[in-house]
Image (tube, rainbow, N blue to C red):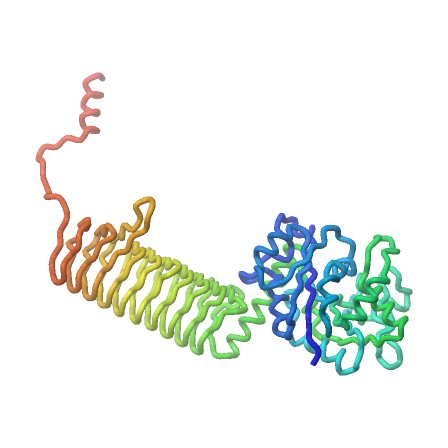
Length: 464
Protein backbone atom coordinates (compact mmCIF):
# COMPACT_ATOMS: atom_id res chain seq x y z
CA UNK A 1 0.00 0.00 0.00
CA UNK A 2 1.25 3.47 -0.91
CA UNK A 3 2.65 5.64 1.86
CA UNK A 4 0.71 8.58 3.26
CA UNK A 5 2.33 11.92 4.05
CA UNK A 6 0.71 15.10 5.30
CA UNK A 7 1.10 18.84 4.99
CA UNK A 8 -0.66 20.91 7.62
CA UNK A 9 -1.14 24.58 6.74
CA UNK A 10 -0.52 26.67 9.86
CA UNK A 11 1.10 29.89 8.69
CA UNK A 12 -1.74 32.33 9.18
CA UNK A 13 -2.11 34.84 11.97
CA UNK A 14 -5.87 34.63 12.40
CA UNK A 15 -6.40 38.38 12.69
CA UNK A 16 -9.98 38.01 13.91
CA UNK A 17 -8.66 36.33 17.05
CA UNK A 18 -7.10 39.69 17.93
CA UNK A 19 -4.17 37.95 19.56
CA UNK A 20 -0.37 37.92 19.56
CA UNK A 21 -0.63 34.14 19.74
CA UNK A 22 -0.81 32.28 16.41
CA UNK A 23 -4.35 31.16 15.74
CA UNK A 24 -3.39 27.47 15.60
CA UNK A 25 -1.94 27.60 19.13
CA UNK A 26 -5.11 28.78 20.82
CA UNK A 27 -6.04 26.01 23.26
CA UNK A 28 -9.08 23.76 23.21
CA UNK A 29 -9.52 21.65 26.35
CA UNK A 30 -5.93 22.31 27.31
CA UNK A 31 -4.31 21.51 23.93
CA UNK A 32 -3.37 23.74 20.97
CA UNK A 33 -5.95 23.33 18.23
CA UNK A 34 -3.14 22.43 15.79
CA UNK A 35 -2.32 19.36 17.89
CA UNK A 36 -5.72 17.86 17.05
CA UNK A 37 -4.92 17.93 13.34
CA UNK A 38 -1.44 16.51 13.93
CA UNK A 39 -2.92 13.64 15.93
CA UNK A 40 -5.57 12.96 13.28
CA UNK A 41 -2.86 12.71 10.60
CA UNK A 42 -0.90 10.23 12.74
CA UNK A 43 -4.01 8.12 13.31
CA UNK A 44 -4.54 7.87 9.56
CA UNK A 45 -1.00 6.56 9.21
CA UNK A 46 0.90 9.61 8.00
CA UNK A 47 4.58 8.67 8.05
CA UNK A 48 5.80 12.21 7.35
CA UNK A 49 3.99 15.25 8.69
CA UNK A 50 5.11 18.66 7.46
CA UNK A 51 3.80 21.82 9.13
CA UNK A 52 3.87 25.07 7.16
CA UNK A 53 4.55 27.91 9.61
CA UNK A 54 4.56 31.66 9.19
CA UNK A 55 3.24 34.14 11.73
CA UNK A 56 5.15 33.58 15.00
CA UNK A 57 6.26 30.29 13.48
CA UNK A 58 8.95 29.68 16.08
CA UNK A 59 6.25 29.57 18.76
CA UNK A 60 4.52 26.86 16.74
CA UNK A 61 7.75 24.89 16.39
CA UNK A 62 8.59 25.23 20.08
CA UNK A 63 5.09 24.10 21.08
CA UNK A 64 4.83 21.05 18.81
CA UNK A 65 8.44 19.94 19.16
CA UNK A 66 10.96 18.20 16.95
CA UNK A 67 8.89 15.13 15.98
CA UNK A 68 7.46 17.04 13.02
CA UNK A 69 9.04 18.68 9.98
CA UNK A 70 8.61 22.40 9.37
CA UNK A 71 8.81 24.71 6.39
CA UNK A 72 8.34 28.47 6.39
CA UNK A 73 5.86 30.51 4.38
CA UNK A 74 7.16 33.99 5.11
CA UNK A 75 4.84 35.66 2.60
CA UNK A 76 1.17 34.71 2.60
CA UNK A 77 0.47 34.02 -1.07
CA UNK A 78 -2.28 31.45 -0.89
CA UNK A 79 -2.76 27.77 -0.19
CA UNK A 80 -0.95 26.65 -3.33
CA UNK A 81 2.03 28.81 -2.38
CA UNK A 82 2.05 27.27 1.12
CA UNK A 83 2.34 23.77 -0.35
CA UNK A 84 5.08 24.99 -2.71
CA UNK A 85 7.22 25.76 0.33
CA UNK A 86 7.50 22.00 0.92
CA UNK A 87 8.48 21.05 -2.64
CA UNK A 88 12.03 20.06 -1.69
CA UNK A 89 10.70 17.56 0.85
CA UNK A 90 7.86 16.38 -1.39
CA UNK A 91 10.27 15.66 -4.24
CA UNK A 92 11.80 12.91 -2.09
CA UNK A 93 8.44 11.27 -1.35
CA UNK A 94 6.05 8.98 -3.16
CA UNK A 95 2.49 7.90 -2.52
CA UNK A 96 -0.37 10.08 -1.31
CA UNK A 97 -0.24 13.52 0.27
CA UNK A 98 -2.93 14.89 2.57
CA UNK A 99 -3.46 18.65 2.66
CA UNK A 100 -4.89 19.56 6.08
CA UNK A 101 -5.41 22.72 8.12
CA UNK A 102 -4.15 23.57 11.56
CA UNK A 103 -7.38 25.31 12.52
CA UNK A 104 -9.83 22.41 11.98
CA UNK A 105 -9.57 20.61 15.34
CA UNK A 106 -12.87 18.76 14.88
CA UNK A 107 -11.78 16.92 11.74
CA UNK A 108 -11.75 13.21 12.61
CA UNK A 109 -9.22 10.65 11.52
CA UNK A 110 -12.11 8.48 10.29
CA UNK A 111 -13.18 11.22 7.88
CA UNK A 112 -9.64 11.70 6.57
CA UNK A 113 -9.25 7.96 6.09
CA UNK A 114 -12.50 7.84 4.13
CA UNK A 115 -11.08 10.53 1.83
CA UNK A 116 -7.91 8.48 1.24
CA UNK A 117 -9.97 5.33 0.66
CA UNK A 118 -12.15 7.17 -1.87
CA UNK A 119 -9.09 8.27 -3.85
CA UNK A 120 -7.54 4.83 -3.83
CA UNK A 121 -10.76 2.92 -4.34
CA UNK A 122 -11.61 4.93 -7.45
CA UNK A 123 -8.01 5.00 -8.69
CA UNK A 124 -8.11 8.80 -8.78
CA UNK A 125 -5.12 11.13 -8.79
CA UNK A 126 -6.81 13.51 -6.34
CA UNK A 127 -9.70 13.46 -3.90
CA UNK A 128 -11.50 16.45 -2.42
CA UNK A 129 -13.30 16.42 0.92
CA UNK A 130 -16.67 18.08 0.40
CA UNK A 131 -19.78 18.69 2.43
CA UNK A 132 -23.34 19.89 1.98
CA UNK A 133 -24.34 23.27 3.44
CA UNK A 134 -27.82 24.78 3.67
CA UNK A 135 -26.21 28.19 3.21
CA UNK A 136 -23.11 27.70 1.02
CA UNK A 137 -22.41 31.42 0.51
CA UNK A 138 -18.68 32.15 0.52
CA UNK A 139 -17.64 28.59 -0.30
CA UNK A 140 -16.36 27.15 -3.56
CA UNK A 141 -19.02 25.03 -5.28
CA UNK A 142 -18.31 21.49 -6.43
CA UNK A 143 -19.17 20.71 -10.05
CA UNK A 144 -19.36 17.01 -11.00
CA UNK A 145 -19.85 15.18 -14.28
CA UNK A 146 -22.43 12.48 -14.96
CA UNK A 147 -20.09 9.86 -13.44
CA UNK A 148 -19.73 11.74 -10.18
CA UNK A 149 -16.17 12.87 -10.85
CA UNK A 150 -15.24 16.42 -9.88
CA UNK A 151 -14.60 18.53 -12.97
CA UNK A 152 -14.45 21.98 -11.40
CA UNK A 153 -14.45 24.00 -8.19
CA UNK A 154 -16.12 27.36 -8.77
CA UNK A 155 -15.35 30.11 -6.25
CA UNK A 156 -18.42 31.80 -4.83
CA UNK A 157 -17.60 35.15 -6.43
CA UNK A 158 -17.24 33.51 -9.85
CA UNK A 159 -20.33 31.27 -9.68
CA UNK A 160 -23.36 31.85 -11.85
CA UNK A 161 -26.78 32.26 -10.29
CA UNK A 162 -27.51 28.60 -11.06
CA UNK A 163 -24.20 27.43 -9.60
CA UNK A 164 -24.79 29.43 -6.42
CA UNK A 165 -27.76 27.12 -5.78
CA UNK A 166 -25.42 24.12 -5.50
CA UNK A 167 -25.10 22.96 -1.88
CA UNK A 168 -21.98 20.78 -2.17
CA UNK A 169 -18.90 22.83 -1.26
CA UNK A 170 -15.13 22.47 -1.12
CA UNK A 171 -13.70 22.12 2.41
CA UNK A 172 -10.10 22.70 1.29
CA UNK A 173 -8.97 19.26 2.48
CA UNK A 174 -7.36 17.17 -0.25
CA UNK A 175 -5.53 13.93 -0.96
CA UNK A 176 -3.14 14.08 -3.93
CA UNK A 177 -0.85 11.75 -5.80
CA UNK A 178 2.49 13.42 -4.99
CA UNK A 179 4.25 13.30 -8.43
CA UNK A 180 1.20 14.72 -10.22
CA UNK A 181 0.75 17.38 -7.54
CA UNK A 182 4.36 18.56 -7.92
CA UNK A 183 3.93 18.85 -11.67
CA UNK A 184 0.72 20.85 -11.31
CA UNK A 185 2.25 23.16 -8.70
CA UNK A 186 4.85 24.18 -11.27
CA UNK A 187 2.05 25.22 -13.64
CA UNK A 188 -0.27 27.29 -11.44
CA UNK A 189 0.00 31.09 -11.56
CA UNK A 190 -1.18 33.97 -9.35
CA UNK A 191 -3.37 35.41 -12.10
CA UNK A 192 -6.28 36.44 -9.92
CA UNK A 193 -7.50 39.50 -8.05
CA UNK A 194 -5.62 38.49 -4.91
CA UNK A 195 -2.36 37.66 -6.70
CA UNK A 196 -2.24 34.29 -4.89
CA UNK A 197 -1.56 30.67 -5.82
CA UNK A 198 -4.66 28.53 -5.22
CA UNK A 199 -4.84 24.77 -4.70
CA UNK A 200 -8.14 24.84 -6.58
CA UNK A 201 -6.09 25.67 -9.66
CA UNK A 202 -4.29 22.35 -9.19
CA UNK A 203 -7.66 20.60 -9.46
CA UNK A 204 -8.34 22.52 -12.68
CA UNK A 205 -5.01 21.38 -14.14
CA UNK A 206 -5.71 17.76 -13.16
CA UNK A 207 -9.06 17.86 -14.98
CA UNK A 208 -7.52 19.53 -18.06
CA UNK A 209 -4.98 16.69 -18.24
CA UNK A 210 -7.67 14.05 -17.94
CA UNK A 211 -6.56 12.98 -14.45
CA UNK A 212 -9.40 11.62 -12.38
CA UNK A 213 -10.54 13.76 -9.42
CA UNK A 214 -13.05 12.28 -7.03
CA UNK A 215 -14.73 13.58 -3.92
CA UNK A 216 -15.83 12.28 -0.57
CA UNK A 217 -18.85 13.95 1.02
CA UNK A 218 -18.89 14.19 4.80
CA UNK A 219 -22.24 14.61 6.52
CA UNK A 220 -20.52 16.21 9.51
CA UNK A 221 -19.99 19.73 8.18
CA UNK A 222 -18.95 20.94 11.63
CA UNK A 223 -15.73 18.91 11.34
CA UNK A 224 -14.28 21.29 8.77
CA UNK A 225 -15.55 24.57 10.22
CA UNK A 226 -12.54 25.96 12.06
CA UNK A 227 -12.96 28.81 14.56
CA UNK A 228 -12.04 32.27 13.27
CA UNK A 229 -12.64 34.39 16.38
CA UNK A 230 -12.93 33.98 20.13
CA UNK A 231 -16.69 33.38 19.98
CA UNK A 232 -16.27 30.56 17.46
CA UNK A 233 -13.35 29.24 19.52
CA UNK A 234 -15.62 28.92 22.55
CA UNK A 235 -18.32 27.27 20.45
CA UNK A 236 -15.77 24.80 19.05
CA UNK A 237 -14.57 23.91 22.54
CA UNK A 238 -18.14 23.42 23.72
CA UNK A 239 -18.83 21.09 20.80
CA UNK A 240 -15.67 19.10 21.48
CA UNK A 241 -16.44 19.01 25.19
CA UNK A 242 -19.92 17.67 24.51
CA UNK A 243 -18.61 14.88 22.29
CA UNK A 244 -16.02 13.81 24.87
CA UNK A 245 -18.41 13.99 27.83
CA UNK A 246 -21.04 11.95 26.02
CA UNK A 247 -18.41 9.33 25.17
CA UNK A 248 -17.51 8.87 28.84
CA UNK A 249 -21.11 8.85 30.04
CA UNK A 250 -21.86 6.13 27.47
CA UNK A 251 -19.00 4.09 29.00
CA UNK A 252 -20.33 4.18 32.54
CA UNK A 253 -19.01 7.45 33.99
CA UNK A 254 -21.42 9.77 35.81
CA UNK A 255 -20.98 13.43 34.90
CA UNK A 256 -23.40 15.46 36.97
CA UNK A 257 -23.18 18.64 34.91
CA UNK A 258 -21.73 18.04 31.41
CA UNK A 259 -21.94 21.74 30.60
CA UNK A 260 -19.56 22.56 33.45
CA UNK A 261 -17.14 19.64 33.11
CA UNK A 262 -14.04 19.83 30.91
CA UNK A 263 -12.25 16.62 29.90
CA UNK A 264 -9.28 16.59 27.53
CA UNK A 265 -9.11 14.17 24.58
CA UNK A 266 -6.26 12.08 26.06
CA UNK A 267 -7.88 11.53 29.46
CA UNK A 268 -8.95 8.02 30.51
CA UNK A 269 -11.69 7.38 33.09
CA UNK A 270 -12.80 4.14 34.75
CA UNK A 271 -16.37 2.91 35.16
CA UNK A 272 -18.58 4.09 38.01
CA UNK A 273 -16.51 7.19 38.62
CA UNK A 274 -18.56 10.28 39.41
CA UNK A 275 -17.46 13.71 38.24
CA UNK A 276 -18.99 16.74 39.91
CA UNK A 277 -19.38 20.21 38.33
CA UNK A 278 -16.43 22.51 37.84
CA UNK A 279 -13.96 19.69 37.18
CA UNK A 280 -11.12 20.02 34.67
CA UNK A 281 -9.33 16.79 33.66
CA UNK A 282 -6.47 17.61 31.29
CA UNK A 283 -3.38 16.16 29.64
CA UNK A 284 -2.66 12.45 29.96
CA UNK A 285 -4.66 12.04 33.15
CA UNK A 286 -5.92 8.55 34.06
CA UNK A 287 -8.79 8.18 36.54
CA UNK A 288 -9.53 4.75 38.00
CA UNK A 289 -12.88 3.13 38.73
CA UNK A 290 -15.26 4.21 41.50
CA UNK A 291 -13.56 7.55 42.05
CA UNK A 292 -15.30 10.75 43.10
CA UNK A 293 -13.81 13.82 41.44
CA UNK A 294 -14.87 17.38 42.26
CA UNK A 295 -16.58 19.66 42.56
CA UNK A 296 -14.23 22.41 41.42
CA UNK A 297 -11.14 20.26 40.93
CA UNK A 298 -8.35 20.50 38.34
CA UNK A 299 -6.23 17.45 37.51
CA UNK A 300 -3.41 17.58 34.94
CA UNK A 301 -1.14 14.74 33.72
CA UNK A 302 -1.87 12.64 36.80
CA UNK A 303 -2.87 9.08 37.69
CA UNK A 304 -5.68 8.65 40.19
CA UNK A 305 -6.19 5.08 41.36
CA UNK A 306 -9.55 3.48 42.10
CA UNK A 307 -11.88 4.60 44.90
CA UNK A 308 -10.09 7.89 45.47
CA UNK A 309 -12.08 11.02 46.31
CA UNK A 310 -10.87 14.53 45.46
CA UNK A 311 -12.77 17.76 46.05
CA UNK A 312 -11.97 21.45 45.56
CA UNK A 313 -8.32 20.67 44.82
CA UNK A 314 -5.55 20.94 42.23
CA UNK A 315 -3.56 17.84 41.29
CA UNK A 316 -0.58 18.30 38.95
CA UNK A 317 1.72 15.49 37.69
CA UNK A 318 0.82 13.34 40.67
CA UNK A 319 0.09 9.66 41.26
CA UNK A 320 -2.52 9.13 43.95
CA UNK A 321 -2.95 5.58 45.20
CA UNK A 322 -6.24 3.73 45.77
CA UNK A 323 -8.66 4.88 48.42
CA UNK A 324 -7.08 8.30 48.93
CA UNK A 325 -9.13 11.16 50.32
CA UNK A 326 -7.98 14.56 49.11
CA UNK A 327 -9.18 18.07 49.89
CA UNK A 328 -10.85 20.37 50.13
CA UNK A 329 -8.33 22.93 48.87
CA UNK A 330 -5.34 20.60 48.61
CA UNK A 331 -2.55 21.14 46.09
CA UNK A 332 -0.29 18.28 44.98
CA UNK A 333 2.60 19.26 42.76
CA UNK A 334 4.87 17.34 40.35
CA UNK A 335 6.59 14.28 41.79
CA UNK A 336 3.98 13.52 44.43
CA UNK A 337 3.25 9.79 44.81
CA UNK A 338 0.95 8.33 47.46
CA UNK A 339 0.21 4.77 48.51
CA UNK A 340 -3.22 3.44 49.53
CA UNK A 341 -5.70 5.08 51.91
CA UNK A 342 -3.77 8.31 52.35
CA UNK A 343 -5.49 11.41 53.70
CA UNK A 344 -4.47 14.78 52.25
CA UNK A 345 -6.68 17.33 53.93
CA UNK A 346 -7.68 20.95 53.60
CA UNK A 347 -5.04 23.53 52.67
CA UNK A 348 -2.27 20.93 52.37
CA UNK A 349 0.45 21.29 49.75
CA UNK A 350 2.67 18.35 48.79
CA UNK A 351 5.55 18.53 46.32
CA UNK A 352 7.97 15.87 45.04
CA UNK A 353 7.22 13.55 47.95
CA UNK A 354 6.29 9.92 48.54
CA UNK A 355 3.60 9.22 51.10
CA UNK A 356 3.08 5.74 52.59
CA UNK A 357 0.00 3.62 53.34
CA UNK A 358 -2.62 5.09 55.67
CA UNK A 359 -0.60 8.22 56.37
CA UNK A 360 -2.58 11.32 57.26
CA UNK A 361 -1.72 14.92 56.45
CA UNK A 362 -5.03 16.37 57.61
CA UNK A 363 -4.69 20.13 57.24
CA UNK A 364 -2.64 23.31 56.86
CA UNK A 365 0.71 21.65 56.12
CA UNK A 366 3.49 21.78 53.53
CA UNK A 367 5.37 18.59 52.71
CA UNK A 368 8.14 19.07 50.13
CA UNK A 369 10.97 16.82 48.94
CA UNK A 370 10.08 14.21 51.53
CA UNK A 371 9.86 10.47 52.04
CA UNK A 372 7.01 9.76 54.44
CA UNK A 373 6.39 6.18 55.61
CA UNK A 374 3.20 4.28 56.38
CA UNK A 375 0.88 5.05 59.26
CA UNK A 376 2.36 8.49 59.88
CA UNK A 377 0.24 11.27 61.38
CA UNK A 378 1.33 14.80 60.51
CA UNK A 379 -0.22 17.46 62.69
CA UNK A 380 -1.78 20.72 61.59
CA UNK A 381 0.68 23.43 60.55
CA UNK A 382 3.66 21.15 59.94
CA UNK A 383 6.25 22.40 57.46
CA UNK A 384 9.23 20.67 55.91
CA UNK A 385 11.84 23.40 55.55
CA UNK A 386 13.47 21.99 52.44
CA UNK A 387 15.11 25.00 50.78
CA UNK A 388 18.02 27.10 52.00
CA UNK A 389 17.87 29.56 49.12
CA UNK A 390 20.30 27.55 46.98
CA UNK A 391 19.67 23.81 47.40
CA UNK A 392 16.69 21.55 48.11
CA UNK A 393 17.06 18.94 50.89
CA UNK A 394 15.01 15.88 51.78
CA UNK A 395 13.09 15.02 54.90
CA UNK A 396 12.57 11.38 55.87
CA UNK A 397 9.75 10.41 58.23
CA UNK A 398 9.65 6.69 58.91
CA UNK A 399 6.66 4.42 59.58
CA UNK A 400 4.24 5.16 62.42
CA UNK A 401 5.86 8.43 63.42
CA UNK A 402 3.68 11.11 65.01
CA UNK A 403 4.42 14.74 64.16
CA UNK A 404 2.81 17.24 66.50
CA UNK A 405 1.05 20.36 65.27
CA UNK A 406 3.01 23.43 64.24
CA UNK A 407 6.28 21.55 63.73
CA UNK A 408 9.15 22.75 61.54
CA UNK A 409 11.29 19.94 60.11
CA UNK A 410 14.51 21.56 58.90
CA UNK A 411 15.96 19.37 56.15
CA UNK A 412 18.03 17.36 55.75
CA UNK A 413 16.56 15.55 58.71
CA UNK A 414 15.11 12.15 59.65
CA UNK A 415 12.39 11.18 62.12
CA UNK A 416 12.73 7.53 63.03
CA UNK A 417 10.11 4.77 63.09
CA UNK A 418 7.48 5.21 65.80
CA UNK A 419 9.03 8.47 67.04
CA UNK A 420 6.99 11.40 68.34
CA UNK A 421 7.69 15.09 67.79
CA UNK A 422 6.10 17.44 70.31
CA UNK A 423 3.84 20.20 69.05
CA UNK A 424 5.52 23.52 68.33
CA UNK A 425 8.98 22.01 67.80
CA UNK A 426 11.65 23.01 65.33
CA UNK A 427 13.57 19.84 64.53
CA UNK A 428 17.09 20.21 63.14
CA UNK A 429 18.64 16.89 64.19
CA UNK A 430 17.77 13.22 63.74
CA UNK A 431 14.98 11.90 65.95
CA UNK A 432 15.74 8.27 66.82
CA UNK A 433 13.13 5.54 66.50
CA UNK A 434 10.51 5.33 69.29
CA UNK A 435 11.77 8.50 70.96
CA UNK A 436 10.18 11.82 71.86
CA UNK A 437 11.69 15.04 70.52
CA UNK A 438 10.69 18.44 71.87
CA UNK A 439 12.48 21.53 70.62
CA UNK A 440 10.85 24.68 71.94
CA UNK A 441 11.83 27.36 74.43
CA UNK A 442 10.63 27.22 78.04
CA UNK A 443 7.46 29.20 78.65
CA UNK A 444 7.79 32.31 80.80
CA UNK A 445 4.96 34.32 82.35
CA UNK A 446 5.64 37.92 83.39
CA UNK A 447 2.88 39.37 85.55
CA UNK A 448 1.96 43.04 85.25
CA UNK A 449 3.38 43.21 81.73
CA UNK A 450 2.69 46.43 79.84
CA UNK A 451 3.09 46.37 76.09
CA UNK A 452 4.75 49.24 74.18
CA UNK A 453 1.27 50.25 73.01
CA UNK A 454 0.12 50.59 76.61
CA UNK A 455 3.14 52.76 77.40
CA UNK A 456 2.47 54.94 74.36
CA UNK A 457 -1.12 55.42 75.46
CA UNK A 458 0.08 56.47 78.93
CA UNK A 459 2.42 59.09 77.43
CA UNK A 460 -0.40 60.46 75.25
CA UNK A 461 -2.76 60.78 78.22
CA UNK A 462 -0.11 62.70 80.23
CA UNK A 463 0.39 65.22 77.41
CA UNK A 464 -3.33 65.82 77.08
